[in-house]
Image (tube, helix red, strand yellow):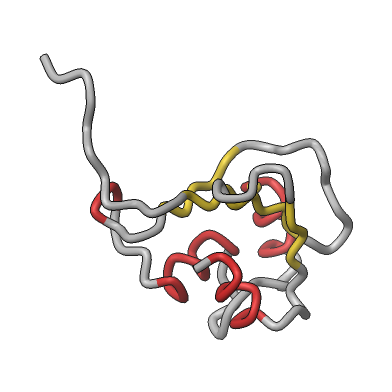
Length: 99
């Protein structure tokens, strides 16, 4: 039985699912389609599917920050710096920082 599996990820981006879902329900999504942040980031970063993607975008349960009107995001390259992304922020610029 295999004990390791390779992926093509350069890094992972963790997105708080609870924050993202709250904003989507209020009609304040991300990207041109107004989607949940993880879906919008996957599309913007060209992340692809699963372990064959260039970047892993993963929705995780609540991160216990719960900012009003924003979503908490953690870039695995800089785990000490958590970001809060709001729907009115420049989405393309935020995505470039996570690229």
